[in-house]
Length: 270
DNA sequence: ATGGTGACCTGACCGC
DNA sequence: TGCGGTCAGGTCACCA
Image (tube, rainbow, N blue to C red; front, side, top):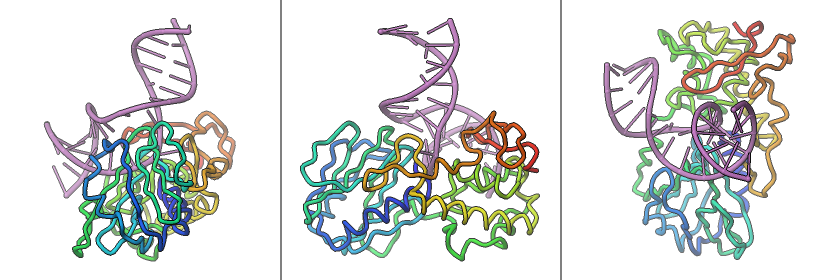
């Protein structure tokens, strides 16, 4: 699914349609997502959507009485469509708006989630132990360097850990490691401060570019207007094992790290 | 604490 | 054409 860029693209697509609208009805056709969709989600009905935010890979629909958290899992997407459009397979949730439009959630694998957090001043537990946002100034080379000291975890697993930094999933971990010429299996603790500077800059750059391109569509991902994302054509290594390295021509290799496919150039990345 | 594995679920693809 | 195996953008619960 959706890594951070895809969630951000969804947020930007939905916000102009949702902000200021009243939620007239929430229709849950399939409540069995990653977690059972809570009944309290219906507390949102009749409320005005004050903002559409994002934290990590969660979209946050804010109202005066609480906020809905939407996670797209591996295969989820959100679209804005006219009310009355007949649901298709895997269209699990519709959020009806006073404008006559609705936000429709589709998720074939159902690894995603719709959660509800009442407005009691607390954050939902799923937002509890998250690291900094990668595209903010909280995510710096110094932070990553300090955080990685004495860690023997492969750097790729380390950077995909949401407690370290949020939003870097398998695609963008592969891509940013390639850009920074860091071998994915290198121990996190072996990162030099100079490496960290390059790596942090490249992560920000890859994520920002992907957002500009509308995200990466491999299979399921759709922007809110139904279009795919176009970053797939920019991918340097992800999915390209066996093909020549775009930088040096050496055949790209793949290994499993933490059960996830990892593609890298054995010559460029050390 | 940390690291490794299985689990959740559907669909696409590959080889026989 | 059908069947079984493998793989896929994420993350949590459990084990040693």
